[in-house]
Length: 157
Image (tube, rainbow, N blue to C red; front, side):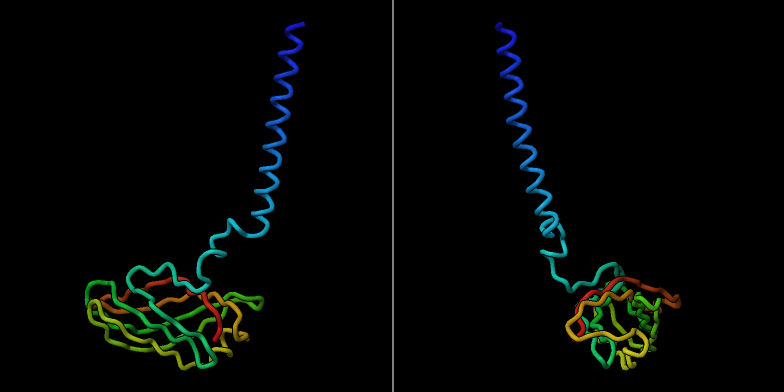
């Protein structure tokens, strides 16, 4: 008789904790579905990542093109020779290049203007809509050509 009561107590214990775990899983699933665990929800939707030798401080994409404010973290004076941007979309990838030849001292900053008609190459971008571009900045330092590649995410202005 005593073993039946122990078994009943253990079963009640397991059922109580089972319901508690089930409720926690349901709440966790609901929070996940709402995007609470997505870092993009909490962070800015405007970011530049992946660049190592150059620091992308600011940028703007509008109908005139992509303008980037870049800082030199390479350590030596460099000459920026080219900017290439790619946007993946339903119609495939599209590249546009801007030849700039901008001198940048060590720890200096410069604006890379893009005067291309960006809509002809990057596709139709709606004002206020978020875009993601893969950007490559080519530069010369000490007689060698380097490339720094990263991703720029923001809204069309």
